[in-house]
Length: 403
Image (cartoon, rainbow, N blue to C red; front, side, top):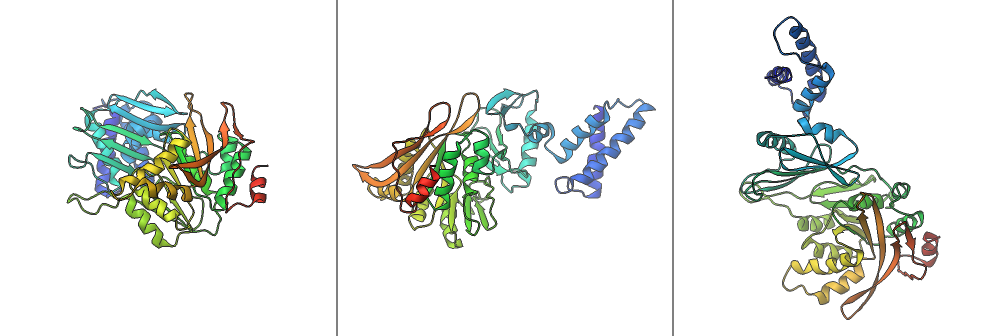
């Protein structure tokens, strides 16, 4: 065993004897590590013990192993790293500015299991042969997703998405070049006046970041209820109730799906409903809620704004056999007011590529739409010939937003 391993074992035993919880009391662990490193450094000078090396680096490595997530902690602490994943333990990847890179970190099968077990400890979620998938939130808000064999071929597949919030408002997105000032003003006016907005895009395109930024335009006196699979949203308001799903227990009971959360949210006196993402039958419950006159925001995976509109007309059909497109399409037309589509370019840059206005008229099963803003490859520009009217927006408000 090397010097770092010897000191780590000594500190681990001290933690056990004193009954310290490293995740709850990291400062105590840090003090024990620093003291143990200093004491070992002195002992190694007058004995045959292995040399520790640079004390500060050794102390950091030991502390990460005891109170953090070991080899992964430097990546988790790096503000430029957006996502960490591996398909096999000896190849750990990271994403910086939307681009994938192979790191120098290598793990073993047993180390992967140990790290995942530690990550799941605070979440209360489980991972076993009967439940080979898991979605969980880490203490810092990062999202963990794990798949194990025999769903995977051989190794555990692990993804950690950090959700680095670099934009807390639409103005932040303007400064980052994701939106123009004109488009930001239009979206802020739309959200403030209660229009229902669907944010679309591919994985990693910035949908959650934009959704968070849109919530900054909600009135300060409104009560907001958010429903998500895993807590990701960070709504900058005072009156916010946040709900997340729960998986079934070992007996197969106690699952709380997103569809149930949407229904429960309506009993909590919301002024605004925010659904983190719709994928399946919960889309029907969301549309019914929005059709009751309560404004809301939501995200959806799609390749374009028009595809997102098509998808939100299709997903509710999964909820029951008696639900037909003749009911869903007019409901979508009455509920959804805007679709804002996000993209991530090959260079890793993220921006809004289109803002689509949704009309209330349906002809031959097709909803009337108007492209209000489109991206020409350089910036997001307003369509001068676009006409958008909405009962919640007066002409003076609309013109002011588009000045």
